[in-house]
Length: 87
Image (cartoon, rainbow, N blue to C red; front, side, top):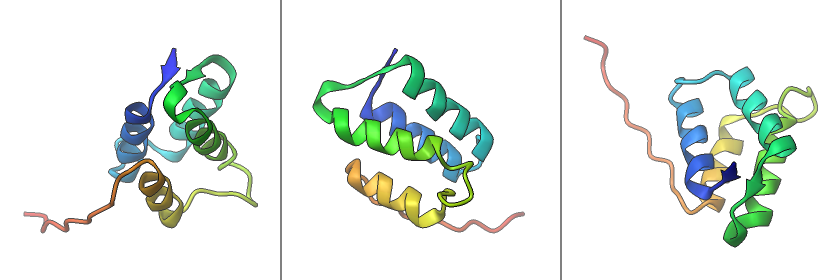
């Protein structure tokens, strides 16, 4: 499997939107670090962000909102929040 920029962005979006939880995101990142290759064009960036996510279960690292926004910015995206009233 090859981790692409789009794949990593989608995983972060799924996490932010609570479609996956922290443990699933961390597990995915750990699996990708062990088993996957990274898209050549973004190799270092993808590897570094994926590795950092894989360490999020260590207290000293964690995974915070600002981290996700920073990762998405580095990947070429801007986060925009939309608040919807529950009806």
